[in-house]
Length: 266
Ligand SMILES: [Zn+2]
Image 1: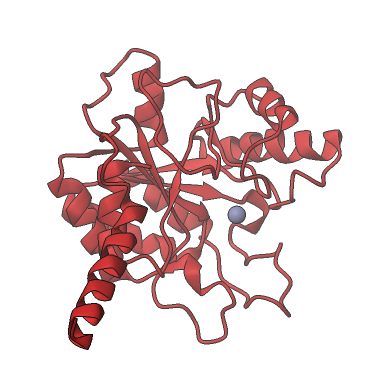
Image 2: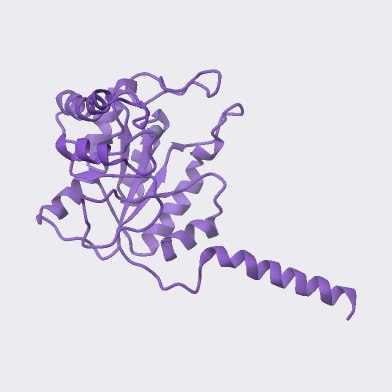
């Protein structure tokens, strides 16, 4: 065989192997999809967590695709109404979530208004109006967080839901029972006092899979939904006692990867 035939076979085989990651042979699953993002924008040159940044145009392209596929984007409030029986679960429900409550998330408002979509932000209560207090400045750049005024504006739009990501972003894995309870309970209480808006959702810092203790404390504190970092789709009807899985979308993910995740939801 001539050498180019070997090269061709090698390229074809490599391309085939690459497609295996999309598990195209598996049947498409349906259920509640939750996407997880952090920042909107270009990462600063010295940022160590560049993967946590999604450029505005990239996010808009992904959102356009989501909407073109017939997904209905929901807020935590919508999900609560559905679970209470006050509204129906749409056939293709999807929650867009942002971790930490970063200031650049205020860019969402114009995008959501323009595209008629909804999203959610997990705030760190003590960091509101401040910066990423929980990070070591020698390891990660200081970043501004959402201000109270911005949060009010986002809440008033009805397009952005808020959930708690604790008081101080303390790693719940290393926290004592009392510390964990304080982080979970007080963040809900203080946000509700400050903004007059009930909080239903919690995302634990430091735990991809929430511990039994976190689960107990979250529901004991009055939350309805516990989110986690485990990837996957959530079967319907939604079992709210189980942590809700999310798909993390990072800077390195190509559009084809995002499309495949949405279509296969693995
Ligand atoms: Zn976080």
